[in-house]
Length: 421
Image (tube, rainbow, N blue to C red; front, side, top):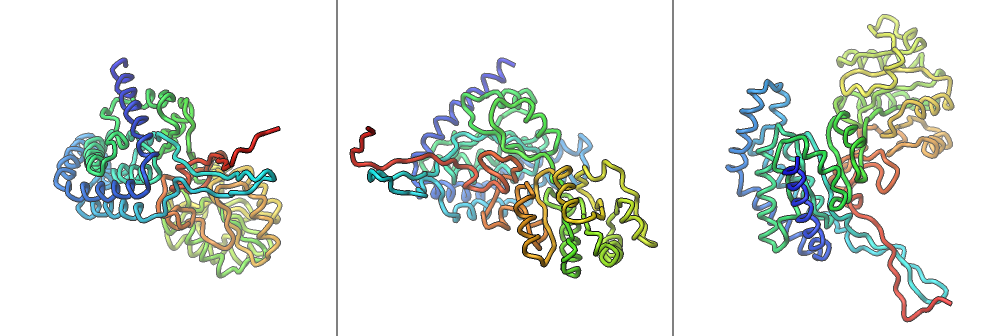
């Protein structure tokens, strides 16, 4: 444990020093570093695939599923996608140093706010190796150093990717300490990183609920997180039912294993008899299991549906399963969302402007939508270019965490000798 603690301290010291250099660098310098990082990654394809082969062999020996092995695999096309991802981040507007809300005070002093990097970001993830490149690019672009701790199943791949990126930083005259990985699979390193509040300013987890809950429980450092994506689509009594059917189908079935997929369908009782039977038919035909409240169950007719249990309205299925409830009206829909939502994404389908505005005001989630699929809560879809994840927190950043979410605002004052009397 002493060795692990010393290792994390060494990473933290290097990251803190690199963060100062990045913050002082110009946007042009950071873009040059991203160009070099992309080039080094492209030139390292053979080394990346050799490292990846070690992870794939170990995954096969450990009996990982074929789906998991496929997620780990670095094909030439996937490496090129990582390279292109870095180039896309490079092309995004630079948020660092931007001054906004600059206003004069009665004494002639100007007061505004400047956007600055957070400092050192710890990213803990159990996902595809491309997260290493994506997270590093976003952090460098926003002027932050990053310490990356990926899953043990992709350890060799992550190390090789980070090494190529660090070479690019050095080539551009910036510290290689700006992008580091934890060079051990020992789980104790995660705990040490979560206690490294002297060096790390924020932790961003990406992974399953178990990982994120552990980080919330153990971290001494502020965490940008989301636990669940328990998202709702509410079909109002004034909905365009043809539009509603398309939005529900897309929200649930376009991709079922993601955090912004619809998990619960709420339908106003005034339109339930007309809307639900054809909606059920379409979903079942597509292979979706429906878990219905008593009123929805009664409208199923001959459709094979399951009676919903209480837990079904509190479950992120991440599968072709949808909980369905008929509600008395909008008040009950809002109450249901308040009680069961994970504060991720909710949408209302309605042609009634006042009801739409009420939904936007009263629903307390990271993204609240009118007549749009829940699947749109995504950094790229929102025009951010890329994201580190979707935050359901309320402090600092909420929703997709893009470049601005990796910065903070400080007040700046421009004076010419003003004195306070």
